[in-house]
Image 1 (cartoon, rainbow, N blue to C red):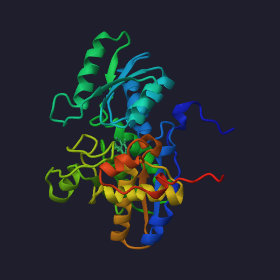
Image 2: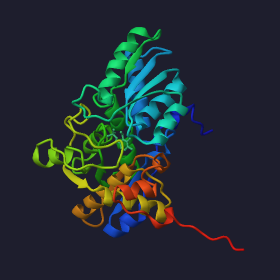
Image 3: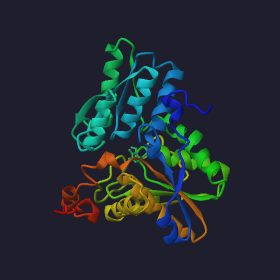
Image 4: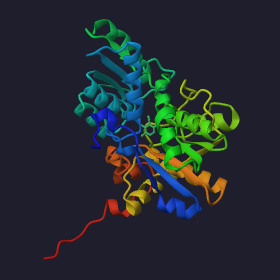
Length: 340
Ligand code: PMP
């Protein structure tokens, strides 16, 4: 019998989907790792599981304990669902700018939600710092204790990708993968997958796809952390070198404007039936850039990070798109007259 023994075993082992138009356009085979098929509909289920398992193994997370985290949403959804499956509660601190759909999903999963203003990391009221202080306080008052997941600097996050995402991509492409591209939130996906792939073949090219508003494109091209502009994408766009990013073997970096990323998201939905969030658009744009750089005939892998319904009120909302000066796909507003 082929049975998953609970939610935890249903995380990972996602398919690689060939992206037809991107592949045709470049003469490469461009493949998307379908992370939206995880139970929490995002790549962050992997990190959530590894962070929880690591804390249990260390003895810091005890039965009935509370997991506290600051998150743009997806990690929180993963932590809440895995927590429910394994007997832990979750308290999630989220910047109020994140999509309503992610907040609704967190509440649905039983997480206690704390919304805070979106302020820079340097500000003590930044969501990550608030979550750290809250975890410290709850550790003293919760009967079964509390831990801070600390996804940005807890390398159990990256280890999930060293042990699962990277080896899966290697096996699924039978070692043919020539390039891997991803955007960075914590850096767990990019760094962990890169480390696993480079260990198997040091010639595999690793590229960062960065949105505007992040500082990593500048860091990997000039050595200086500097940002300009902004992006409507969520869950990505880092301003510092997190512990997860330290020593990541990154060869190339691309900076992708939202206009390019959202057009790709719309095209993938309209022509290939793939319903994805904005960070997947940044990633596929990055994969197209890398394919052009490597030339035809190569196999390039990127990550389809999360499912598009999570952004219906923003990325797929004509009013929001017009406000941001972004294109509105015709099918979003298509109407039909009923015959008399
Ligand atoms: N895309 C989305 C939608 C995310 O939520 C995240 C994680 N915050 C990422 C991409 C980036 O993943 P990582 O944290 O592994 O860098």
